[in-house]
Length: 74
Image 1 (tube, one colour):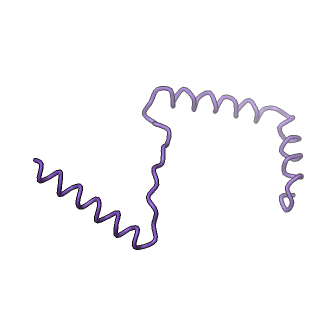
Image 2 (cartoon, rainbow, N blue to C red; image 1 turned 60 degrees about the horizontal axis):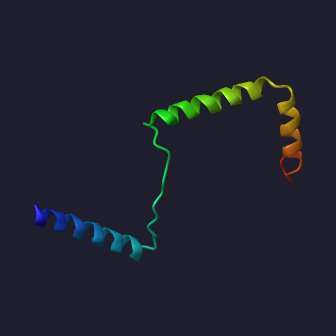
Image 3 (cartoon, rainbow, N blue to C red; image 1 turned 180 degrees about the vertical axis):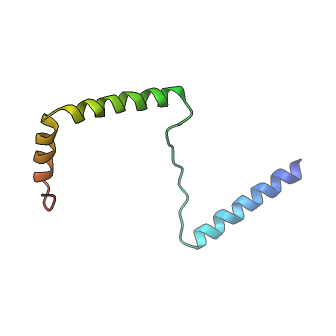
């Protein structure tokens, strides 16, 4: 079992070395856990807010004002 762990570790290190030689940099990236119940709840909450905003007549005014303030977006 220990030999297998060492082989895996060595393969991973060799891979990282090859990638560095090719000009890549390793980063760790945290993303939301889509399996978590809280993720589903937050998606629903944001969807409801978005749907309510779509029904609002004022949203067009806001979007026009924001887009108009950025050069090239009008």
